[in-house]
Image 1: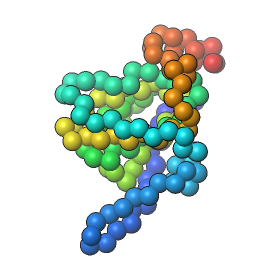
Image 2: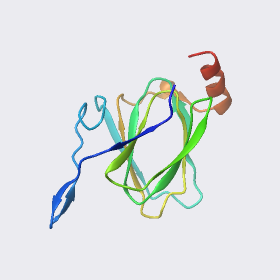
Image 3: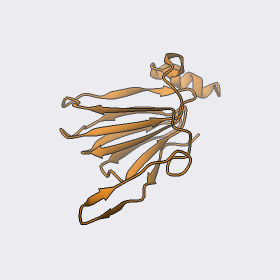
Length: 135
C-alpha cells in the first residue's frame, strides 16, 4: 500500500497562454468515470477526512493551493498542490485530509468510478482496522 504519487502533465502553449490536456490511460493512469471540483472553501476548513475502499483519484489544484495529509495506515505524509501542471495520484485505501486552501483554490478531482457511498470509510478508526485486516 503506497501513499500518493505526484504526476506531471505536459504543458502546451505559446504567447497566448498555456493548455494542459488530460486523457484517460495516457496522462491519468485509469479510465475517468467522474470529474468534480471543489472551490470557495472557507479558511480553516478541512475537507476529505475519509478513504475509499476501491476508488482511485487524480487530484489537481488548477488554481491556488492546498495541503493534503495522506495516510496508508502505516505512514503519513503531507503534500502541497500548487501547480496546475501536476496532480496527485491517490490509490484506494489512502486516508486523506485536505486543508490550507488558498482563497483562489480550485481543486479538480478525476475518479475511476462513479460516486458510491458504500466505497467511503469516513471513520479513521474503522480505516485503521480495515488496513490491519487487509480489507
